[in-house]
Image (tube, rainbow, N blue to C red; front, side, top):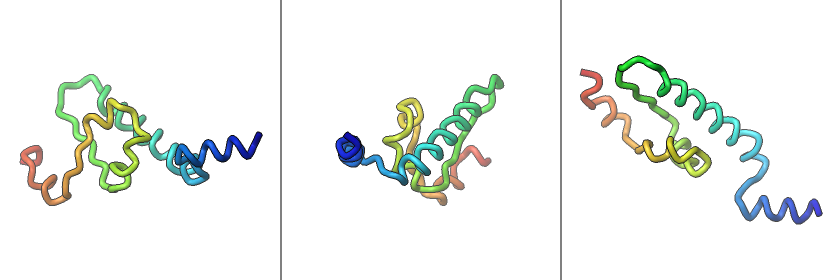
Length: 84
């Protein structure tokens, strides 16, 4: 039975790295961004995930977050109008 479970998890792409490091990192990041967005004031909010791995592992993130993500080069981000 254990072999079948391990085989199924491997087919889904879930391994020790995924359960030990990736899921907790995605969960913590999602909670932090959710708290930022739920704040009641009216200011514009921007969450910047500087590590490119967040975009690579977006399939593990909730749909409400993924739909708002877009990859941007750091130079492009620093030249946007929100800093002026």
